[in-house]
Amino acid sequence: MNLLEVKGVSFAYAQNSVLENITFHMGAGEVFCLIGPNGSGKTTLLDCIMGILPLKQGNIFLNGNNIIGLKAKQIAQIVSYVPQIHKKTFPYTVEEIVLMGRASHIGMFNSPNNNDILIAQEAIESVGITHLLKRPYTELSGGEGQLVMIARALAQKPKIMILDEPTTYLDFQNSLIILDIIRKLIKKKNLSVMLATHYLNHAFYFENNGLSTLTAILNQKNFVVLGRPSEILTRQNIDKFFNIESRIIEYNSDEKKKQKYIIPIRLLKKEGKDVV
Amino acid sequence: MRKGHTVSDFKRKSFILFLIISMTFIGIFGSLFIGRYPLTWSDIIKVLSTAINPLQKKTYPDIYNTIIWKIRLPRAILGAMVGGSLAISGAAFQGLFRNPLVSSGILGVSSGASFGAVLAIILYGQNYMVYFFAFGFALLAVIMSFFIGQIYHSTPTVTLVLGGVIVSSIFSALVSFAKFVADPFEKLPSITFWLMGSLATAQYKDIIFSIIPISVGVIGLVALRWQINILSMGDKEAQALGIDNLLTKIIMVIFASLATAGAISVCGNVGWVGLVMPHIGRMLLGNDNRILIPASFFLGSFFMIVVDNLSRSLIGSEIPLGILTALIGGPFFVYLLKKTKGKGW
Image (cartoon, rainbow over all chains, first blue to last red; front, side, top):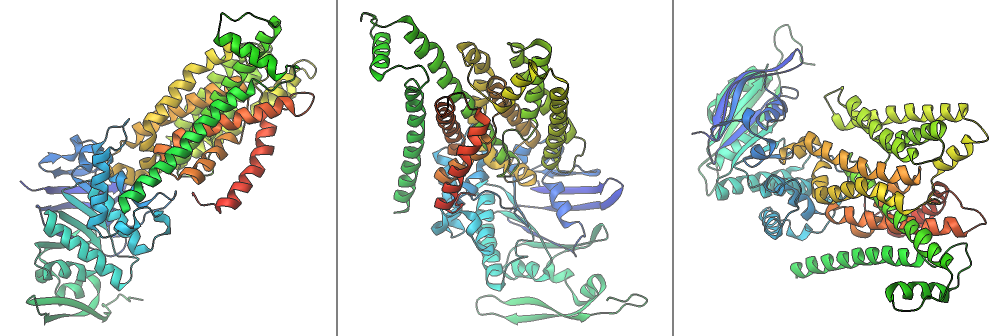
């Protein structure tokens, strides 16, 4: 049985169709990189999987259960979410924020107990920000803030973690810190990760590190390709779907064998279509 | 060392909360000593000690008993209940709407209650009907706001606020209209006085009337207090964290509205408490609603007792509460703002 199974899913905002007939599945410890240009419907697909948006057609199964029959609480016990943008309001401390990850395990009229606090602290420790425990999260840098969100998603004790463009606003170093943490979590906790991203190299990153990685390019309401990064992220496909001339470079690092990386070179001009 | 830090932080907050709670009870006790009727402290002590020890012989006139037990005590208790309710629902609404500028009147409760009270005064004069009308219209206003908020499905929290704004202005207009047509010699003064808020006529029956909605609302909000943290993350994140947004919001709005309506229907339209007391709580104790919600209640209680005591002792006649809450609360808030540099939100 697959942890997540998406079967023929379509979604529309009123009459405006966004997703059509999307099908894929993922198992425990796997990575799914959802790649696509801005506005292609990546976030919409993630929202459908979390049960936030109602499907127009098709079914989504979590652990074999159709999400239509699941309550928000039951979905949240399997899937946790790291938002792309978190709108900060009140200056809660890092600990208070991460503790909120326990909500799906706590009744409506209850508050977290000591065990929940321990789980939250453990989550904070596993992303390496224990020193920020009592700091107001509104004062943190972008990278630290993202780690807080990951810790909160982790405190939820999910089987699948969904991250919506987790490195968008981060510099090189912080991006790698986030990717590194995600990679370790997948290995250590057998977590499955689905991430939406603009960066093709994220897919290579996980594959290079020996994780079972799937990637799909979402364009024109559907997956134009779906498969292993090294099979589908080719020069031809990048040319075809992104209008970009690129090179895939391969190099050998010390500990690992072949490492792949993609470099965009320049925009391509298609016949009859000016790309400026 | 970190564990130690956590414990000391918890201890510090518990201590501050304990202080706030004690201040409320000291405030109620202290209120017995303040008032227009010339009672000396020794008279009051005598009345109190007779109450504690029934064997002691009564050595003072009956009027003393009436003043202490039937005027000053119910007034102080009602003040504590009302102030606490306004502050706690203000704190809850701020969390729910993710907006620190929101107060207990956001969904039109205050203007609904005002219209109800004004209507009752015009129809029946200043009697118990005022409570029922104020309470009924307060809840009606919230229900209307809620349904207006449901018209659009996209961002319910924003449309809920919009609903509150619309309903508030409708009821404010109706209040103005009622004032315009009211008898200027008989009805208008009591309308104006009610609208500015007062505990001057507080009796035990006011307490009995308001204790049910207030205690249901307050206990409900205290039970829900941690969920408010989660709702303040916004709809999408709250749902992803496993919260049934709509259900939780409806329950919260019901509790907060019951508390506010119960309070306003007996004390009139008192502003400011529901906006500022939660902020003082945030400055002193942080934003975690697990502690902020109960703290707001007692801060509101204490503040209202102090304001009411000033209202009946500053000048020859009673000063309406709504005027004093703003005049005292405003500068005090500025002082706290300066001292804490807005740390807290």
